[in-house]
Image (tube, rainbow, N blue to C red; front, side):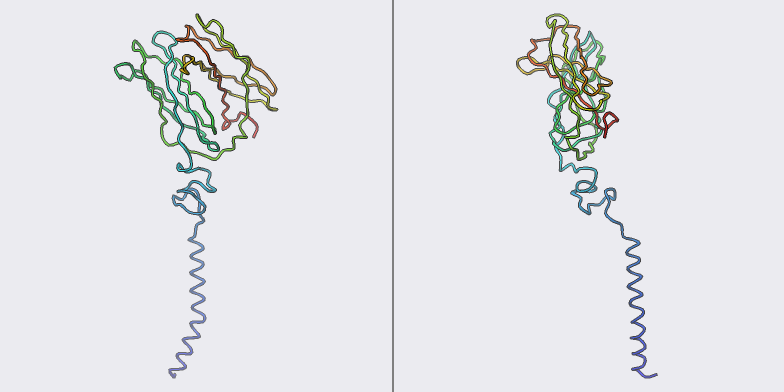
Length: 260
């Protein structure tokens, strides 16, 4: 066979072999290729970070601001029994957390830890609210400082604040402030649907803006266009003159409370 015949045969072979090789390569690439996902541990697609931002269900920590703890205090209920309250704010206007874990520590004047409570709550956009842990036993030691800290890293999600049902508080009045204070108010549901499992915190402030009293209650259900009376009581007078009342109802929209 001549040189040119061999070369021609080789070129003819390439015409069939090269497309076959390309086809196999494409098939392997298709099999091995994975579309970007929000759980692959890689920043890809439209993500703003690793598995967060863009079309992912979670926001990146760089896209949100951490919750603000304005204050944390202990309020005496009886000898050796205190309520611990922290007042928080979510500064993010369109970000929420389904569940956030926290730790409350109470110290005495000698910086000795005398009580500790763990709990969980949720965060809704732009809300200011109180975390209330009631009837904490401290023994013979008197609380002097209370610390509130978030445990772990919250998982932030985009959230439309317009989907939060609004509840109103009306007719707040305090009686017996110099003996056994009693706060009365009414919770009003102007929505066209019932709301369940509402937690309500009441905070009392003096003229300097210091919290001098706190209490909490729950409302199992409030029907559409219904008004529910609320009562908060304290066994002893406030350590100051009450000048402002702040009653805060909270609805956990991440549980089955309201229609979707």
